[in-house]
Image 1 (cartoon, one colour):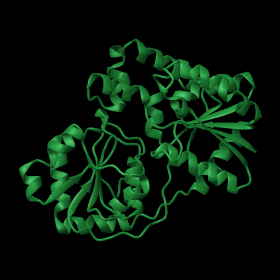
Image 2 (image 1 turned 180 degrees about the horizontal axis):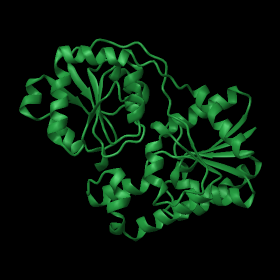
Image 3 (image 1 turned 90 degrees about the vertical axis):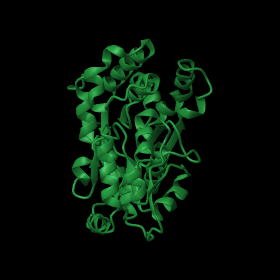
Length: 334
């Protein structure tokens, strides 16, 4: 097959979407497919709106040659959908986060949960956000199919985006083989992530300044690194912590599992059903809940108990599995 991958970022750029696109491309090449990758992020310096028009003309030859298009970037998915429809091509979109919600929270500072956003804040959107919503709804309705990493996100999107007539598939995120880890030399919790308001870092910083948390010897590390170095940081850490207002399928938690590290995770996540037996969940809007869970995990006996839980988790979902599942989706709808 001739497969076109459209992504926002790609290595050497750093980020989950870049790793995802790269690994899919390498998996399909290994299986004998002809893979082309086009990167929307290369047009980032062009003003919003104009860059989409430029990208439309740029992508036409690649879409025309492709048997199937997999879009991994919300900003460019609509553009590629227009071109794909012109050439009667199959286009499948793999969702990531929720760009509209992220924009809204960043603009307003209103720390609304993702699962409550469309029910309670839609009337607060500004003109640009409303345009983005309508463009995204048109795109999601006109794709050949949508791949979600979790049922949780799909359920949030179904009603506001009117997706009852769309074809939906679930392909879980990458759960890698276990890697060797190291015993921690301090009780350092890795919480590094993008500095965005929905990531709830202000609350997290306040948690680790609390007197009782300080007395438990718990420390917070928010320094970001390239993925390879970040894995090394987790390997040497005590635990991982994420308290965001909505994290669909956080790669940092999957890295923690792979490295056998306990973690504290927001209950506002699509991973709940898969990892509910090994996770420590917190309410991201309740600072006392987060404090109590950090203090609890900082206890040596509790830590050993949680380590055994992590060790018992044997589920894997490789890039080979993911690549085959994507191709199966294509075959089902073609």
